[in-house]
Image 1 (cartoon, rainbow, N blue to C red):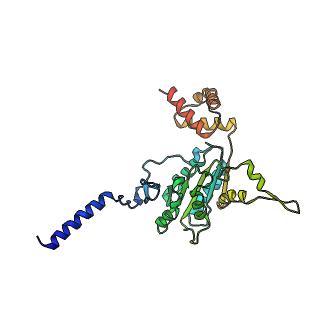
Image 2 (image 1 turned 90 degrees about the vertical axis):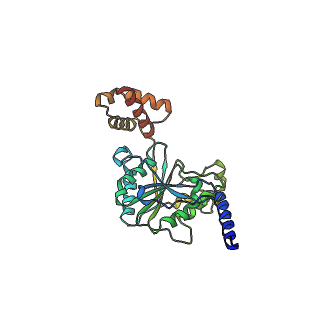
Length: 291
């Protein structure tokens, strides 16, 4: 065996040992796998992320979402503009839990997927990767909504500034085939405390101006071009949603009428008359009463 052969054998052995300790390479996105993806970082902070196709997408439609007509109209119009290549805004959906914020975004995906809309769900912990995600999709022909669900921040969390820069603040322009849609129970995305009131300043002309602490807390939400608010449902709204989902599960009008009292008790036990509670009741009731 020549010295060259010995050197090549040792090099191959060294490479094999290095491959065993190095993290695996990230797979290239499979754009044909479907219209929705999740950003995954199995190695945690510092590792490289990748787009994982979502195998089973919620089949909810805009017609399934009741008693949020103005909100549906705003989000649908903005999404249609985006898909058609017209100017559109990043969107912040805030308000009562279980009222259809995230469902509305999924319903828009189902309506416009055939026209090129794609959804990328990103966890709050991975928001620092937003520039990498945008670079990954910027040259694609599809239109991408980056979806951040149930978003809120505590003091000092890094993802806050990363999202702020991604929305409006980087030296690079935002790609015209990317928008950010976020849902939150907090309008300003950060906790608001009584002590914040102490930072307000009275001017000589009697105006009241927020201090730096308050300005910082509202600066992120202000970077979303479109704010859409959701409100708790009235009793009749809740019962209307219950009836819709009971019909979805095959119940007739008689069964729906008979379910009213049970539906109200179900909501009372949970302290909420939300669309989510209505859906959960309908599944339980239909499952128990239909043979």
